[in-house]
Image 1 (tube, rainbow, N blue to C red):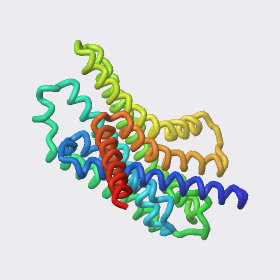
Image 2: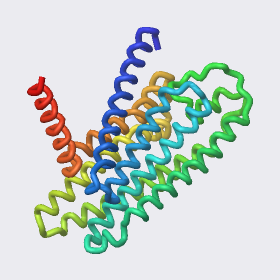
Image 3: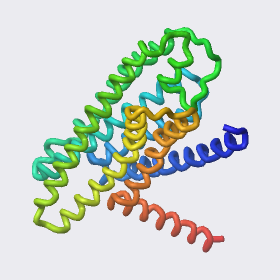
Image 4: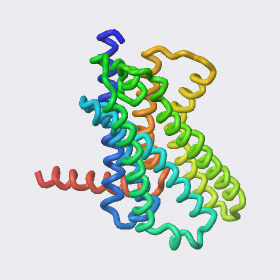
Length: 287
């Protein structure tokens, strides 16, 4: 990139990062400060917000090993967070009368903890491989220091080191993604069987918000994978663009989707604004 383009790109990334922190921070504050929202679905939304903040924060650190670790940790935990949310909605629609006995807060916290532990273990092994190889290049030409760019900068044959990311990608794209798609297909079928129109509209609204989030996460990965499979060679700028979209668009969209399409969060956010507006009026009156 030319220096002027680098400055513009850096400014856009900074603005996007600030919006991500603001949006996800609002979600976390609203849910954590309202006991009525201390339910499994909102706990999962909080988990996704934490993952989004961590994932997008990898664009700000300059410590390569730390950046690589948290970049991939955020990527893998985001995928598992979306899987948990799909399972939660499946149980809510397929077993509505048993939902609260099956999906409890303690079980939700346990599943979230297991996903984080799995992420720590898998990515810890990946980083140990990255740290063990010698490097010939002092500069990484990619925006994010992900595994593939680190291995390409090393003084080794990169082909033999790509088995690990291929297996992780297969797990994410060929394992969890089809499972999530099948889950939402089953959800769509179950929604069509509902007789209550209000319940049907509520479920459609909830599931559509989840699908928007799912699409924003998987679309860049699928585009990159498809282009690679059909033999399209991407230049450095195009690869960096895909990395930026994959790392920042999903964390930016998630809080906006849940604030605007989840009635409870939307109502609580409106209440906060009204109370803030009233307090400002009182202060002006006192002055």
